[in-house]
Amino acid sequence: MQEVELADQSVACCAGLASAPLGAGDAVELARVFKALGDPVRLRLLSMIASREGGEMCVCELTPAFELSQPTISHHLKLLRQAGLIDGERRGTWVYYWAVPATMNRLASVLRSPPRERV
Amino acid sequence: MQEVELADQSVACCAGLASAPLGAGDAVELARVFKALGDPVRLRLLSMIASREGGEMCVCELTPAFELSQPTISHHLKLLRQAGLIDGERRGTWVYYWAVPATMNRLASVLRSPPRERV
Image 1 (tube, chains in turn yellow, orange):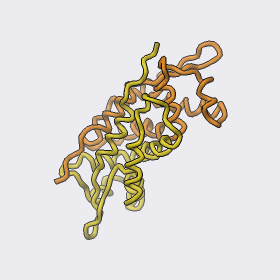
Image 2 (cartoon, helix red, strand yellow):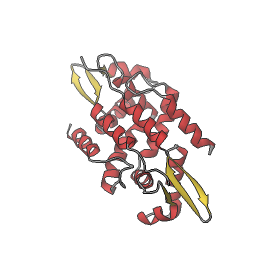
Image 3 (cartoon, one colour):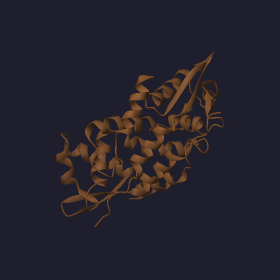
Image 4 (cartoon, chains in turn green, purple):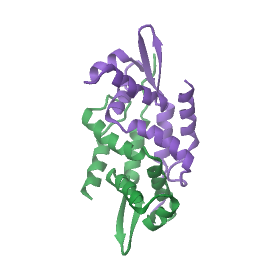
């Protein structure tokens, strides 16, 4: 769980991309989270979880939506979780996942700041 | 230039990740843009360009900021341009680049929509 918290803090660190040149360390941390989003299956998993009525989703409901093995889906979910985009907990047989809006909103803020006007 | 416009349209296609499950086709297009952001050097290049007073930057100013070869920097700039995050034009000896705020803002919108509340 600690790596999720670290990722979350690191995303909080960075001002908007357009407000000042990004430092090398911040760029490494941010790139890790964007890289987690840079895969179609992971984007669909995150969207399925984040849009789910009730706010969370059992891994047993996620796997049948893809023609991929359970270990492959679990690997993608692990990368989303390490990036702080989702979190989850085991209840009995299954793990349940939910989105972490704070991380998504911070990424949005990093992207949203207005670029300098061209002169 | 056409590929930049196509990427730009594809990002416009998608509602927020949390509003409804993302379709497979939309996920492929969006993942391509997020993947372009999933590298520290590309994030720093984009941030340098987007935060530059005057709104644009010569490739001749970008390369010295990194301990990387000119072809490597050009490759990263090409990926950012194909993703619709920057655009550029040659003037005389050098290519000048500027950020495309529309693409960054659309990605921010995709991330920003409020997830469902957990019940």
